[in-house]
Length: 285
Image (tube, rainbow, N blue to C red; front, side, top):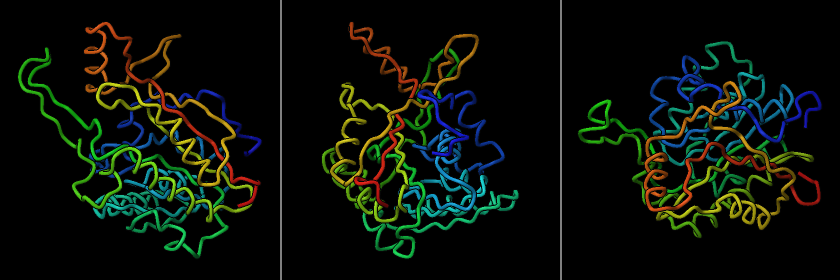
């Protein structure tokens, strides 16, 4: 870890809304991706674990948040994305960052990240940091618009489906999804340089109304892929104002919480995501 940028156990990464963090820094079309990493999380992790000129890899780069924040910080980056549409957005966002004066370079490859060690074979042993999130399934919360400010009328969803491609790992049941993620992490381990770090952001999820310990499953999956957990931090999705929390939960998260509370269950909307920091077993990249 960069001794000048030691991460706290709780990162204040939700001070600004996601759309505000992206405004002008990403092309407007990026907002339609339903499962984006907060730029503030990516930038803080990259600053803490890398130096200018280092290589950062994201095996499931989506619209390129990791890549954009890396090149703005003078790092170089490589990303893979299964969905051709989002891979194109990722490349466009990198180009936009370069046009704004970003000093780093990045490349985007469209493909299945389970093959990342083969596809990016020229980068083996070079990555200082792998930063990514697990696939959350084919559907995410997306965006919603109600018929009126008072909540009357129809509720219209948009950007809530990540993929319609049945070959996408996100279509698999959770056990198979974790198995595939393990293959991705094992491949990323081959790209790490000695002392390199893997950082994974994991949001709590509910399946059938039940809270799933996805972070625990990711840790088990990562350890089976040859990685060792060194830190478990919290990255806030909410803002901090005057000693209190500013809720930034989605409509669907709040609806899930309200429904649970009406049934007498202690259900609350998530205000953070776990940030898991791992290294390769034996300390070698």
